[in-house]
Length: 292
Image 1 (tube, rainbow, N blue to C red):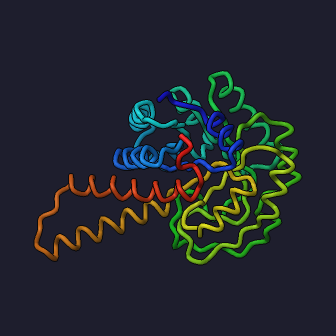
Image 2: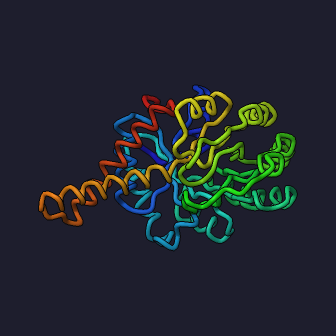
Image 3: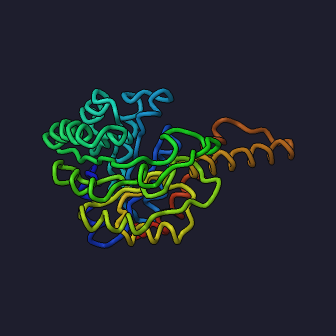
């Protein structure tokens, strides 16, 4: 199955009103588990690598592994750089073969976000690479832990402004827009309050496929309503990583209690199996299962 772009995946998701899962990866076990889950579910999938994870594994090391897995998969796979802010890293990802990049200029004033998004878009479009942009502030920064408190905030100061989204889309050429409407990076400690009316209005004003960041651990109804309101790409990492860690801890503890030896290759197999199970579960909720 050939490597595909985010734009191609979003076209089908938009037409059929489902969301494609974008799963951040940091090693081979996660890559293989996600691909196995997508093939089992017969679902398109996005393999993401976040700029904040470069200290864990260099971009040049993991890119060829992700791309090889994507090209060998039996389902459509896009390879995406997540939350890119450094223009040099974004360009390197495109040169390495990523089919999609996200420029995260949400921390910038609107005019500057537009300017820098257009700089990246110009390069990306010339290379046939899709572009995702972001407006609004996702609660908790990317790469944080769930134990980091969310400070009190005014939604109008944090969530995506629908009129600004309309202006942004009028002055940029992007394929998807990440928006803030109450989700947070990391695992949720309490049930988040999501502003679906705001999300629905943004969709009406922009017409673009919308992206949920901080997609870990919501209840099924929250995912379903978000998709009904226009979410077409759904980022999911923290809950998967947390559940895999719990699975490994439980298996190691059980082996120790039974005086069975554990080996590193056991951990690799357990991790792939745990990832695969979680991926299949989420794809069924997102509506992408059976779409490939």
